[in-house]
Image 1 (tube, one colour):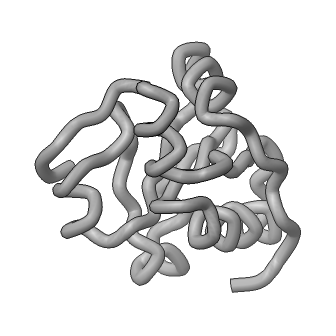
Image 2 (cartoon, helix red, strand yellow):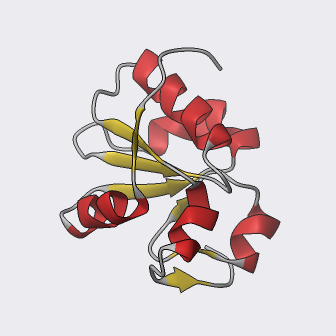
Image 3 (cartoon, rainbow, N blue to C red):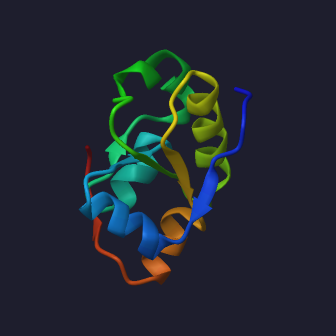
Length: 109
């Protein structure tokens, strides 16, 4: 996966974007997601991302999230390279989301 790097947003800014209609996309693996995830996040594991990214809408902002922000930045860059225009990376990932006291969920997608 190559491409541009999406801009980082804070967990609070990411949550605000989701509340305003953006889709939160978690690119961690299923066992990580089941342990804890940002509330409302849709799971598309990075290991499946290149074959599944087309499931994501191009007409809606996307907030990418992983554990700490590295994998989601890669996935977001891939989306930008594929013609997606409104893609951001959640700085600090799920750990940052939790540290900010934002709502989480547990269990499978």
